[in-house]
Length: 388
View 1 (cartoon, rainbow, N blue to C red):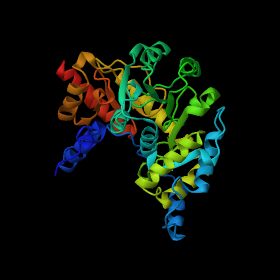
View 2 (spheres, rainbow, N blue to C red):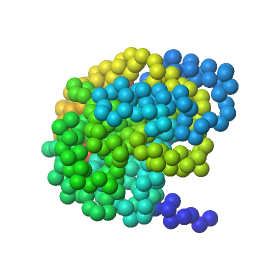
View 3 (cartoon, helix red, strand yellow):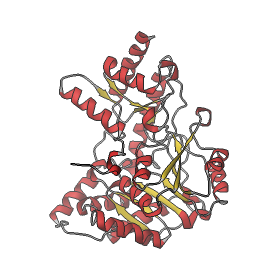
């Protein structure tokens, strides 16, 4: 069968590929510790699981509205409006999708025409660029610096913007670096964007509840972006609901919302109704479970940073958000070589920074138990010392 050029030009996800390789090695009887996937290892909270079970018992088994149930769209709007933001969202500003990944895909498809430029600060999540390619847009990568905590600077942003720029994708807290943009840093970027009113801001805030020693600031805190801001979020990370596949986008532009709804209607009809009911309960319930998980991740963050400081050749700042450590390993041969070596020699699965546009680094997920973190870092240290 002759495949389309569109599909043949899309790269596979390196993080998923590394995770699959680690699982295969584990199936073959090899003791591999996987630090490759961005997935909490905790179980979905009990009250959310009960909601899903009750939804099945109550026959939530039929088609629902394309942009999500009214109750869930309201829950999403209320959830965001509780934050320190200047833009107030209504249920009509929400489109619920099958995970935040599809919400991002829909947003790009709804805005980008062939040849449109999309600015993406690197390092960035593996799928942004591939989604832009599917829309026949042009990725404009901006390589951020270790000295800037891998955050985009106003000067870099201004240099990257052209008359062809249609969108910028910004992620805070960031995957893979764990960096969190401060309010002042975001305000400086917004000041530049004021001169480019046609540029859509796609703000991926999926890790927003998972910050440590700082505050997450939403791009919705800047009212001047209201007419061209698309905020992405979901329940996967903060509520340990990756398999439920519920995410959403918020935007005040009703024409954009209508376009995403039409697009989604042709793609999938609606997100799974049982999962929507579970997500509704998660958002409407007290968020104690989210705070408990954040504290667990903070303890793991402190542990992995302490152990990583003992490894020669690792250069990093402590991450402020998400659940990743992103050390620069240039003196150890770079990300590709080191990730391959660690899997073969230490039986630890990491993802090369080249997957995120930063080949001098590797990404280590600390969304695993403290015992696994301790053992994995011991193996990595031993393998690095052996190599040197």
